[in-house]
Image 1 (cartoon, rainbow, N blue to C red):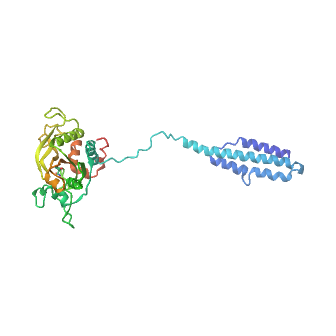
Image 2: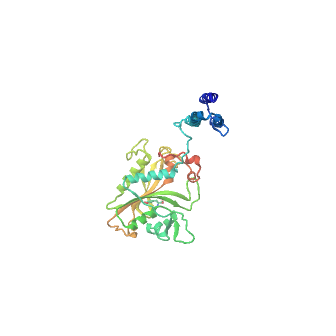
Image 3: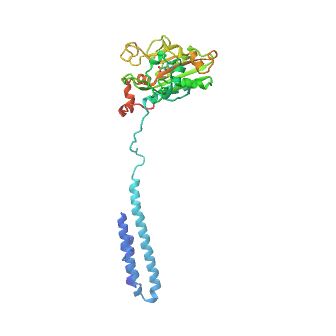
Length: 352
Ligand code: DAH
């Protein structure tokens, strides 16, 4: 019995000093001491050789030895598992991660949103209409009856199944749809895509984008139109010089023009942003670039849409988003907008 007690003490000392750094070493401990052929089982097997009156005392000792060994095993197990955790916690979670490249908005979307938001600040609401339009909304109601020569100003795509359906050539069709609703006053901007049967080149495309504006109320005048557009140019392109003013600031001028849906009609030019008005290829050496068409809504349009033209007046304008974007970013080829080359598209960020 005494030799057995001594043996247990020796084992206990050995166990106490056992060190495991890896989980495999903790497992080796388990096999050596607690396995089916382990030392604990071995010592327990000695029970049969112990004198009967000593068995109780030896049993307690054995039990305590077993618990001691099991406790050590648990300790080793969690220490080595903790070792992996320790390795994991060596990771510095405050370091920046691998960057995920974010997409950017298309320059046309950015500029369209900016145009719209400038007019929204003046109280204009946004209205939209269909891209497949009928003849009435795109032409006839806009004072361009069948065979009117002004229809030739815009090369139209017709839908072969139905000659009355076309791809809208301008967003002015949305004006008509709003006026037909008959709710006055009307103060809207209509952003959207338009289509024309044009040969694709650096300056023309078979589809592009416009923003249309329409304001109809009592006593709307050309002066209101001018002030609205002055505000727009100032917000869009920077400071506006005083009428006839000098300096680097953007200058604005109106030229008489013709549109069937407005009377009088005008086109608005701004001083060329590329050469500062000195003359270059973009402004064809005139120092001015046209950015929009506008005018006072023709009374025929009001009548066509059931609005009393004796009571109400209005102004309208329409601009090309591509043209504004090209001026703003000095882009010389319209085709870049639809080629989807990410090297081009990535250059535009939210800050316009
Ligand atoms: N619809 C014209 C175009 O596409 C632009 C335009 C000019 C719109 C004058 C208007 C306007 O509302 O008053 O060329």
